[in-house]
Image (cartoon, rainbow, N blue to C red; front, top):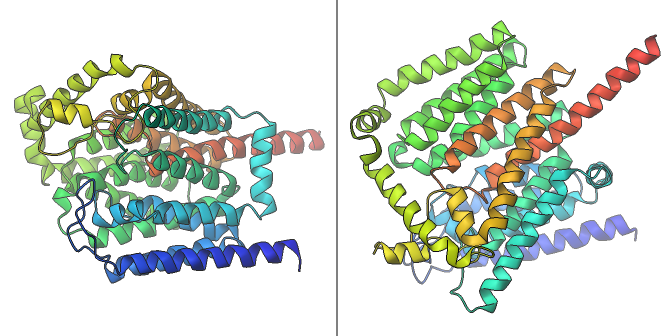
Length: 455
């Protein structure tokens, strides 16, 4: 038996065992509401969630034959599980999300192109790869220090495993993205996953966390639309418009401020293209018009009248002040991943354990100054990669690089008001950014070679 065949059989057997355990767990009613309280006593995943899990595991198993399946499975994990939901708590508590991403990564590693892209990144001494390793190692060190000093166990939000899952997501996306087709596969799988989540929303106005995934994606789709011919451009423009309207419909001001910043950045980046300016301006005008007649309008009016005294803003500032006052006590290693907000919630006498609601402050509290700097630099490197990719001689590569950069700007703005430092969707975008920079170098080298041959 060849090594490849043995690997594939072993991978499938592991997938089957994991599937059996996870499906058995789905038949056992939960004994409580869990550490974050998103579930309820006696909770069991619905048949829709079980079907989603079955498709995800099947794709992760097939990744040993085709790395495209693994990339789709990872995108489904990033965008297909509703945040702040009982389903996500189940996925975390039972290791479902970790299993799917790990299987997808292991299965994809059999592919020569996949391994070659990673090996080339390491041989080129790409900054992002070593920085990602540093982020993961430092989070592990902070967790070890927290356990050594006997601090309370970490909650599932911002747990060390979330950082590991996000890092693996970045690696899979980076190694898979090698051409126009692979980019469209990733985006299409994300669109399908977002549509799946949207169909399950009971009340869009209360789905604030949903907006933080849909707003950056609207910028990504709008930027991609500017690079396509008319049929494709119309499809992507329509999808971007739907995402923008859905984000506005949630009435989440933080997410929609990020959306506005991302779209404005897209216009500024496209100043030389009349068609591109027309596309993004039309989307921006439609979004602003819709905002004035949507659930966001009362929130805007409240913001204009109350300013910093707006309830959600005032409470966040109170969270941030309380968090910052505790940071000097654990300035180097922090309190450990997944433990942020605990002391703040106790000091402010909140009814339950709440997050800090700001990525820089959250990671500063959990992983100290070093962890915060590493995360900020990783995000900055992602923006730099997108900027370098925008200089590509290939118009499609240049356009999607700008789209990715504007999406990252949206996430960066959102991160100021919500904890997103270990979000898989952020790392999914970073994977795109680093891969597009590599594509840009390759395309520019090909153009230079072709020019020299023609001389």
